[in-house]
Structure formats: C-alpha cells, structure tokens
Length: 340
Ligand SMILES: [Mn+2]
Image (cartoon, rainbow, N blue to C red; front, side, top):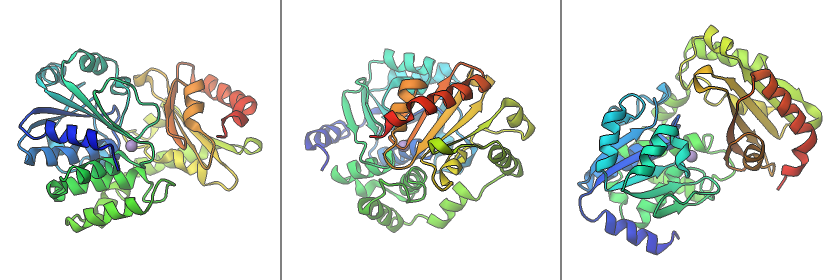
C-alpha cells in the first residue's frame, strides 16, 4: 500500500479544477511519455486544465501515442512554455527525480516557478524539489507506479482507452516486454486491467518494436560490428561515433535498445554503449547489467550519471576514444567493487 496520507493529499489536490503541467524527463522514453500522456487523459476527465511540456523533441518511435500532438516542446518554444509553467498551480515530474534531468534551462525554469511540485518516479536517490513525492524503486516503471496510485485514489474509472494505451506503453518498454526482474504479478494484473480497457496491445507492440527504418537497422549492424568483449571482466561495450551516426542518417530514438545486445552474450553481466553526439557536447553513455552488479553506483561514481541497479546512464567530456580507454581502465581496476 502506498502511503495513504499521500494518496489523500493527492486526492484533495485533484478534487477541484487546477492548472496542471506534466513534465517527462529530457530525451523522453516510453515510460516518461506514457506517464505524462496517460495522466493527461485522466486529469482532463477530472476537469483540470492540463499541459504536457517535454524538455526536448520526442523520439519518433513514440509519435503514434494518443494525444502526442498536444505536447509542447520546451526547447522549441521557450517563451510559451515559460508562460504555461509560470501560470501552473501544480507540476508533476514524471519518471525523473532530480530537476537536472530536464536540461539546464528547463531546470532553472522549474526551480523558479511557485507551483507545487509532485514527483512520481521509480529511480534511486530522489531529490527534494517536490512537496509530494511518490518514489518507489520496487516498481519496474513509472507507469505501473502511476497505475497503482490511480487505483488507490479510486481513479481507475478514469483510465480510458487512451490512458490505458499510454500506461501500457510505459510498462512494456521499461520492463523489456515483461522480462526484467521487477516484473511481477502486480505488473501483470495492471496490464490485464489495461487490456480490459480495450487497448490494442499487439498493435502497440508493433508500433514500438516493429517500426524500423532501413537506416536504423544498418546503424544497429554498425553498432554490433563495433562491439568489444572484455571477457575477463565479464563486460562488453559498443560504440557509435558521430561519423557512424551521420553515415546512417541518425534520427532521434534510432539507438533505443541497442545497449541491451551487449548483455545477451553468455557470461557477460555488464555492458556499456557510448554515443558520440557533438550536439549534446560529449559522449552519452548507457549502462546495463544483470544480477547484482550495480550500474547506478558505477555511473554515479565515474560518469556523472545514475539510474537503477541494472540500468543507468552517464556522460563524459572526453573524446570517444579517451572515454572508452578510461572505461576499460575503470572496469579493470574497480568493477569488483560494485557487486551489491
Ligand atoms: Mn522509467
């Protein structure tokens, strides 16, 4: 049971019409957009004035989501976004737990608003910017946590087909199609209920996972060619340079899921994926692990990042080659310290 006081506080907030802004993290994934758009459809029915503001562009593999056309992009129209943020009574932070996850400018804007902030998130080590915090790492997705909150608040009846489609999207993407360790009977019960709401689950899978461009598959091929095994450390990594991305006409979202391939090799419990993005100034890194190797701690200590025990992100200001060399050094010398 979620803390009942918190559920009551949320219910009393939502009892009368409010100006509400829903914010996913920067580079939003299926879980962040699922939570934002799912909650959007619920709150609209509760007569609230609701806006969704994404810090930056939404990856194209999510462009089919219900109500996606209503989302404002902070980076594309700062002035309008600031106006909406400054008029908001309440701001929900969805699928992130520190404001820095929205990018430098939006972080400032959020810090400067007088709005009451509510966090719904499942990452480790939540910050303290929100006055009402639903943070639970036991959940495999923010969408499953949000579903549970809505259930306990007595709001399941407001999960219509659109909201259910969005929540399902978050659960299926963050659980690796129901196979990651946090997937449990509650997850499947939630999903069963969402299917009861009339969603077209095979079509959602199709839209999410069978929607490749030729270039994306070529880029995946390149990434796999670039895979390196550090067998003695049970570690693998892949990388893509800016040149590789250009060669295959990289579009936002194209590299989604690539990192997981490194973990599918027998005997590997840790993998990393390095992407050279000049636009983002530096090297973006994703980490994945199996079992009790804690990539959250690893990313926090060495690569200004964090996340979950088995999935985390980070970045580096060094060149691609220097970053990878540093990574190999660190793995060799410190990997054994991160088994929890
Ligand atoms: Mn998530």
